[in-house]
Image 1: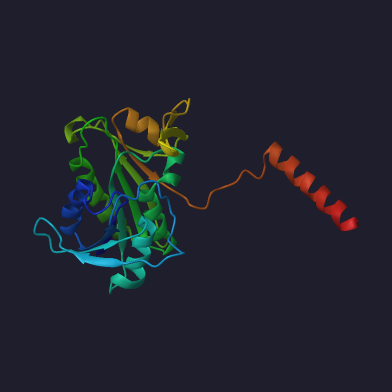
Image 2: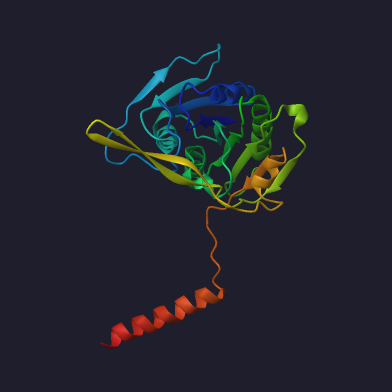
Length: 264
C-alpha cells in the first residue's frame, strides 16, 4: 500500500511524526507537507505564484521520503500526486491535526481540505484530528488512524472514500467508545481583533467567536464532548433540499422573473 501523508500544521508538527511512525509500519510512506503552519487554508490552491519543493531529512531514523512545499495543504497533495510520487498513491492521510475539526468548521480546515483534494483524484482519503484542552495526546489517534487506513485500503471500494476522524482529549484507556457520526453545526465564527501601533492599525482574524448551538447525539461534536472518537463519512456532493417550501417559492419566483425578462 502506497500512502501519502500530509497535514496543515507543517513539517515540525509532532502529530505528523506520531502518525508517520504508525503508517510506515503498514505501507510505503511518502510525506509531503507545508514548510510552515497553514492552518485555516481549507482546500485553497496556489495559482498565482510558483511553488518550491525541498527534500528534507526524515527524523527518528524513518525511511520515508519527505518533502516540504511552500504552499497550502492542497498544494502538497497536488504536487505529490502529479509530480513527486513515482507510483500512484493508494491512500492519503492528513494529520494528525493539533485541534479537532468538527461540524461545518471542517470546510475551514486545511487538514480536511488536503483530504478533499485526495478524494477529487479518486483516492481514499482520511483527515485525522485530535481535540485538546491543555496537552495534546497523539498516541490514540496514531493507533486508530493506522487501523482505519488498513480497513479502508482492504475494502477495495469502487468509489473513493472520504473520512473525517476526530479523537477526544483522552488517553486510550479513557476513550469511552467510537461512533459513526454526521457533521454537527458550526461551533465558532471568526472575530476581529484590532490593534493600533503608532500610525498603523492591524486587524487579526481569530477563530474564537462561539456559536450558541445544541449538539445532538449522533453528531461528531456530541461524540467528542462525551469523550468518544468520531468517524464521519463525508459526501462532498453537498445535497440540496429541492422539496422545501422555500425552494418551491424561489423556483417559482425565478421562473416568473425569467419569463418576464424574455417577454420584454
